Image (tube, rainbow, N blue to C red; front, side, top):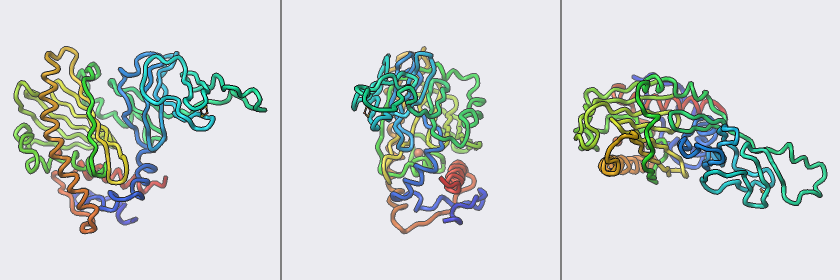
Length: 352
Ligand code: FES
Ligand SMILES: [Fe+2]
């Protein structure tokens, strides 16, 4: 195991070995050593605009309740009642005045402090005033809301270089249009590996390959993120001409920016060998005919997504087969994969 986790220079690197992609032990390692320490995209700011607006989510098995307080502060409270671990909220909502546990009705303020505990008068030395819901970290950025339990880096460190590259773009003002989920029979890292290289584009994405300029397909890597970009030439009714930008933000957030369109993905482990990938589409507020534009955008994106899913499912079978350990990476085309695997090795070397 230790040899598998030593840092590897790009031109000598192999992929992360297959056993990290398979089985319950790997899933538990990822939960403890990756997800507990990484920032997770959990909501859009428009879902949490006013006091009492709330969104439920989860990081590394910890149920969270993102809620805007009466004081305007956005908090990420543990959605786990201090009485006997019941849920404060079962779904997203707007304008709640307080948070009432669904199990026995203990009630908390929007800041997580216990306000009242039903029929607890007979409990000796019970100090309701000292009871409060634990909080995770939370950060708002360009219309997106991230949270973290025990992050290895601050949020500004995590996205600093992306912010610089996006300067001048109007993405924060983009309006959310629609959400889709894809449940896929592959490990979450397998899906991200595939996302992080354009090496496969000429082989499994003929339609996308006609739009991108494979010779000018560039990968840049930073401390906690990587960026793939390529000139883009597409039908004016689809994206038109410009640049395709694909960001990976450690550990599992993807931002896909085309001319006048942003798409976010979250790659969420569901179980060993199973993940869910979420797609949220955003367009500029002044985009005309947004429904027709979205229909074309989604049809194309879905086609590419299905091509990727078929390959990821096949690769998962290969990884689980026992036939394969770890192959050499292509230094010219797989530096994004190498960057991700180096971050994984670092996380796995750090005991959790
Ligand atoms: S678990 Fe919340 S009131 Fe009992
Ligand atoms: Fe792909």
